[in-house]
Length: 482
Length: 152
Image 1 (cartoon, chains in turn blue, brown):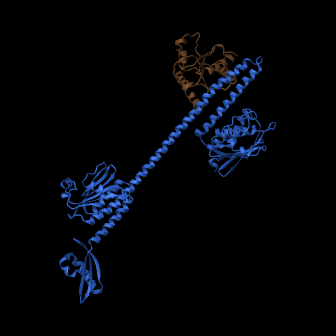
Image 2 (cartoon, each protein chain N blue to C red; image 1 turned 90 degrees about the horizontal axis):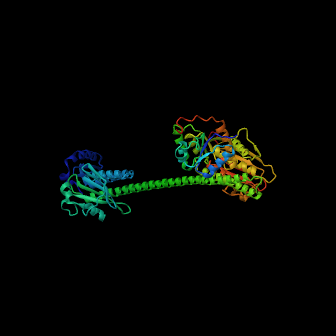
Image 3 (cartoon, each protein chain N blue to C red; image 1 turned 30 degrees about the vertical axis):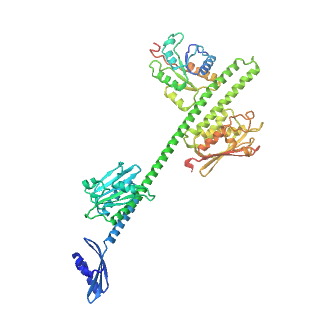
């Protein structure tokens, strides 16, 4: 717009000082100068250029809208960044209400979140004082409802006579004009409502104001949606955690029940068994010598089978205890374990030639003494037992320490195990030979494997049919030897 | 060796086990009848000479109590009662239980038993055990004086 003709009328007095300052520069340099200027009525862009003969031309452009837009953009950018860093819905509501009030120079600002049941929480800023609420209220046909149900922004320049506005709002709260817009998530879902009331300067909200409100609403909606999603995810995660905890507790309960079951079964079975065996042996004693030999033999079988069964129950009990009981681990010297196992074997009458090829010092392991004695006892007992008839058993034991692992070897001169059976022997009740040729319950190696596994170790065998067996177990070395 | 004047009170709710113990004790020379009861209540009545046990001739006060842990660990309850009874607290108690759990053994000692034996799986081992038991508890062991007020 050519300003020189109208400048005398519209040029505010306060423009004179900056104008004269720049005019001197333009006259001296001969180059045009542009500067911005703020008047009470708005922002202007002033361009001063030489027109020759000491005269100056001046262009005055109304830059209010441009400046306001820049300001609004800056505010929106700031709000966007700050909202995206916020995970709490409450503080999002606070920020949106505050920033909207400032950006639009509004007296009051209302921001509310809605759920399918209605509005769930809101902030109402009235000239600085805030009202917060977290209760469900149903939008009526008037303003919030109108915007929420139609999902369209709404501008009312005369609230008092607007049929869509609650008369109480204009009457009691002195609301003159209103702009409002829905908070729509990117998927189109309605998640809230934003409203500004009365401009501070007494002016009326413009279409430009509504555009800014829409921009704020877009940012606010995205932030609120993110926060809601995050809340939901957190809730889901904690629900999942709780379910895992519940299941774990259930499993633990079942384990304890099984434990109690195993205990009571073994206990309950052993008592009548003891009665059977005892009655049989009393009968056997009473008729010793003069009785019927077949009858004595049967009584003998009853006693022998009953005692085998008692051993079986005891073995099953130790196997079940291995899976359930807490096992205290500490530094255990292997030579002590071996010695105890050998002593127990000889006390049980199972003797043979056991050579302990210890280095000067046997390595120590991180384990449970009693359980390890059980393991070694089983290995040695097997090594002594499974020899061909007439062969004198000879068992060699040695150990080595490789890095953090101790490996114990038990080599025998027994009957050996075919390759295809080498995995089976570690299963409960798996027997490769009849009880007649080699007695036992078939649980010993299963106990050994479970015990070694509870130590975090491994067990295995290297063998060939007829060529002896070499069993090995790997256990974690004692903590101080690592 | 025989033990003529020694009375043993046996408390076991398993009738078979009770019979084996009595038989074994008899065979190793315990001549006075072993007083066997199957319920805690009966044992208490016996010791207090109440009800059908009032006759001191037939139910003499015991020199030793042999106790099974019994169903629901009621043996422990009996043990607590015995040890808190002013006139009976000195009586030696040997537990004879089918349970070899260390926790159960600890509990029995905490409740005041003097010895804990696990019932052996065969009668012959029981015989050996009873022989040793009588030699020690009725022969070698010095029995405490009966408290005043005992069966008064």
